[in-house]
Length: 191
Image (tube, rainbow, N blue to C red):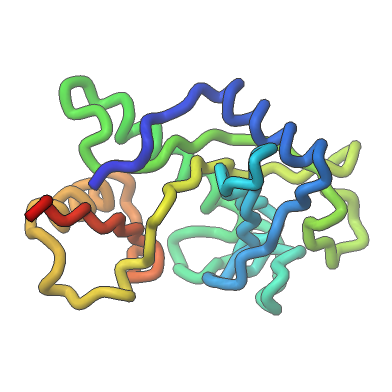
């Protein structure tokens, strides 16, 4: 199963801004160990997830009690806090710009973005930037997706598992778990 076709950066940002302009605040998702905010468009449809750098695990504004300093050892000793958002952008770029195999691992459209909103978690007294914006990854929402942990391992075709393994080797990913693999159920064939 593949994510929805990648939209343009300007179209995704315009849709996010329309939703914010209507008063649809970013909603903190309580799954995972970092701050992930669900963003909606003007039709109230989920369209993106924003993951701020300073809310990653062991970053100063982590909303889930895992505060620390940017650059300290994160959840994994090889990925310092404050760098996961960059790894997500790189994973998308590697997957989407692989010639004939573009989109091979189905990484959703992801870009680096800045955002400001009162709904974002701020525990630190130091400014995030000169003007208060947060920097993070903005990733296109995959509709109808569920976490792989909701399924048994035998339900995954080996070819799809191999695609994820190849992506993880290319990106030196050490954070793969059944909570960060999205699964979209294929429609049953008509009778």
